[in-house]
Amino acid sequence: MASLTVRQIDEALKQQLRLRAARHGRSVEDEIRNILRDAAGDTETPPGPSPSQRATEPAATAARRVLLIIGGGIAAYKSLDLIRRLKERGIAVRCILTKAAEEFITPLSAGAITGERVFSDLFDPAHEFDVGHIRLAREADLIVVAPATADLMAKMANGLANDLATAVLLAAKAKILLAPAMNPAMWSNRATQRNLAQLTADGVTMIGPNSGEMAESGERGLGRMAEPLEIAASVEGIFKTAGAPQPLQGKRVLITAGPTHEPIDPVRYIANRSSGKQGYAIAQAAAAAGADVTLISGPVNLPKPAGVTVVDVETARDMLDAVERALPADVAIFAAAVADWRVANAGAQKIKKKAGAATPELALAENPDILSTIAHRPSGRPGLVIGFAAETENVEANAKAKLAKKGCDWILANDVSPATGIMGGDNNTIKLVTANGIEPWPPQSKEDAATMLIARIAAALKGDKT
Ligand SMILES: Cc1cc2nc3c(=O)[nH]c(=O)nc-3n(C[C@H](O)[C@H](O)[C@H](O)COP(=O)(O)O)c2cc1C
Image 1 (spheres, protein in one colour):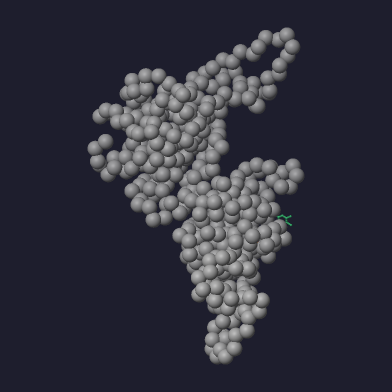
Image 2: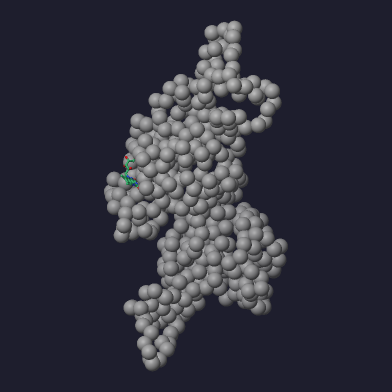
């Protein structure tokens, strides 16, 4: 159908059509084509914006809708990948670009990836005839600001609303997740830290920033935007938590995870094969159950779980310090694979290989036993102390002996011999060892094992018999 002529329609209907077309960002003729196509039951994708690309009734009808606000920072290009990561997870994404963001990426690229019209103008007549900024705020289940510039944080902290992004943020009732990204000097500036404190007090959730290389050559420090995968995991965590029962509401849960690195010299270290996946899954499950979670993590390559306070450490001694600082807690779960020994004679400088010289000998010193130290605390011992026993032989006997020796309440024993694939893998087969006996759990994913553990903890805190 090359052209379309519609006669004898009254002025009121014409006006309705004009409004509807403007709302969908189409010409009146295209709008009528769409109406006819829908009425005829044609499911082929029409030219121009598809029904799912409509400005006001988009994929936003999907169960989980994110409104992504992209600020004017160098990390804006990463937000295009974030859109992809969110969509891979079945999350509908709409996008607002600030004017400054348009200096870094184009609305065209964001629109092509979201499959939606991209918004940037507060005074856009096609969108604002029915106060579209309020609707944008209302139609999101979660608002993500990434990158959150120093400028956006300042405006949000002070309630400014002088462009579309800030007007939407001020009108929002949905939860807001901010991924700050800026130069380390901007991040550590007292004004930014004041704004951060204000936003946290206002209930805004933060992810990052991370530490590392900056876009400016030679600059390093705290200020890199969290990676798209980390933000996507955080978004998923928030959606999972919303609507889930909260059996650990009001409880403080402390979890350790990952390996520790024990330096040999400034560039070498002793480590183990722990990936941290089980501890991270437990932290996520505890947060989803409403707990106030602190995760003390050795060096791992995992996204930070949403809604969890993560303390990064390297060595066993750092981990014990961080655990003690994080007390008091109702429950402590020690899932980290802490090195039993550290190098007593670690070099202050890189140990050099010298032709003909003897191979250096490493003297080992015993590390503190974190589980036993906390379980034997005369005061401030968490009510429920849980350890892991990663064994390669005599799993049950060793786990029972560990329960008695360490003074903890439960041991989660697992066989980490290489053939099981548990160390570093995605699944786990656990035996729960308590004073009352041994309970074998089925082989399952580490996430399912975490959910099972959190359900057991919730039951134990309620007073049910273990
Ligand atoms: C090349 C360049 C890179 C920038 N990168 C950042 C950044 O990473 N973080 C930030 O807070 N501001 C950054 N700025 C400054 C912001 O673009 C500026 O504060 C702007 O007003 C932010 O607008 P918005 O918050 O409305 O997006 C950068 C500016 C330039 C010219």
